[in-house]
Length: 198
Image 1: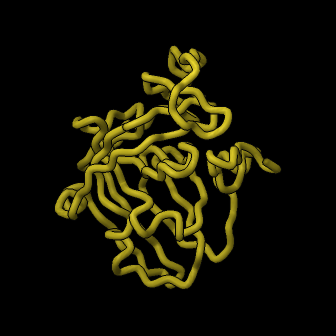
Image 2: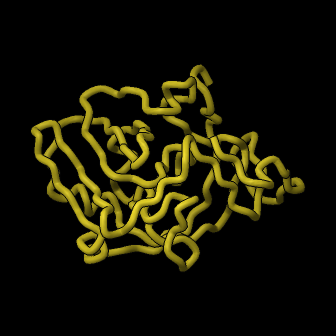
C-alpha cells in the first residue's frame, strides 16, 4: 500500500455533517494497493461484459465522444478522511450500460494492475457512478487513478477503483480485492461499514 505524506494528519473538528468516524482533509491523500499504474490513453480500453458473453468495449477516443458530465461530490475514505466539494468530469455508467443486456444483479470491477472491487449493479446506475477522467479541471493524474477511474461517491472510496479497465456482470456477489481482506462487502460510509461485521 502506498500512503502519501499527510495521510494521518487530522483537521480540526468540522462544522459540517460528516459520516461517523470521519475527519476533513483539504489535501488529497494517495492510497494504493500496489504500484501506481501507468496507462496511456492510446492503450486504454474499457469493457463491459455481460453473462451472455456480450462484451462492449470503448477506446479513449470513443469514450471522449460520449456525453460527459461535471460531478461535484463529497468523497469519503475508509481510512477516515473525507474531502468535500470535489469536482470531476466523466461519463455516467448509465451511458455505458445503455446497450448491455443482463439479468445479473452484481458486478466485478477490474483495474489495470489486477485490483478489483465488487458492487451491486444498482449502485452504478441511475446517476450514481461515472468513469471519471478529470479532477478539478485537469486530466486525472496517475496517482489518483488516471487516465480514468470509477467514481462511486456514495460508498467508501476503495469502491471507486483506480485505473479502471472493465466491468463483468456476476450472478452472485463475490468479494473483490479489499473485500477479500476483511473490508465490508458494501461500504456505506454513513453506516460506517468499514470492515466485515460492521
